[in-house]
Amino acid sequence: MAEPAPWTCPTCKTGVLTPFCPLCGEEPLKPIDLTLRGLAEKLSHALTSIDARVLRTARLLILRPGELTLAWTEGRRKPYVAPFQLFLVANVIFFFLQSLTGINVFSSNLHSHLHQQDWSELAQSLLSSRLEVTGTSIDTYAPIFDRAVVLNAKSLIVVMAVPFSALLPLVFLRKRQPFMLHLVFSLHVYTFLLLVFCLALLAAKACEWSGIGGLDTPAVDNVLSVANLAACALYLYVAIGRVYGARGAMRVVQAIVLALAVGVIALGYRFALFLITLYGT
Ligand SMILES: [Zn+2]
Image 1 (cartoon, protein in one colour):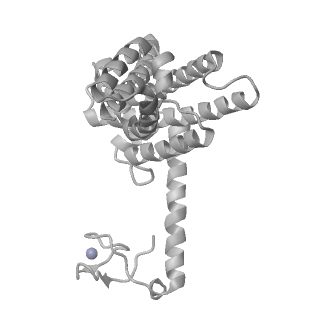
Image 2 (tube, rainbow, N blue to C red):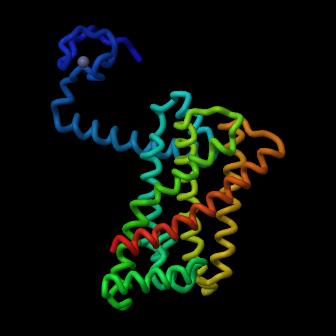
């Protein structure tokens, strides 16, 4: 960048020799900045640079597993979207696709909890004692539950990243890493998973349309679950090599353990949503 003529920062009132004020980041005012055209240029620059940053970040996340976590912990942060923001963007896309396809991955409705889950028996007895306490019938309660569980699933998905990040220091006990690295890695893994879930949603919808059956068909559900888990294990295998320096046979074991943990956490999350919704409505 060319060195500008010395200017005085209008905010700090100090003389500045660099393109931006080193104290507050202000840049010298140009005549065009006070025109509508200048405003339009600034706006389009801001929008395209957000797009470019999101795309660059998504590409790195998908094509070079673990690299984004390294960039973040080494302080190369400016070119990329921060981990939590990126996670939120993936959340928005995921929930948008869920409402578009009408398929719910985590927010199973009351009927599904009572009849299709591993904890259905427990769910039935918890529900009947809850209905007794509140004095409502299942017919009035079911729609209330179904509305609330969708909202809870939206706001609580980040909860899954927490137990995963707590597991990482145990799996990589020999590598003493700051907890922040585990947390950022966990957020990146879950962001990637949300994108995988998006693909799974589209695949499930395609199966539904082609007449094979949707996610409530056991075969479709099983194939997609196994595909999700395999994608997750493969991704983790590459990523832990880069971030934790995992090598050899141990790396395979660690990738499998972490992928299984993701599956268990997802099941636990579904059950936790049931409890939270049951006692929160
Ligand atoms: Zn300044």
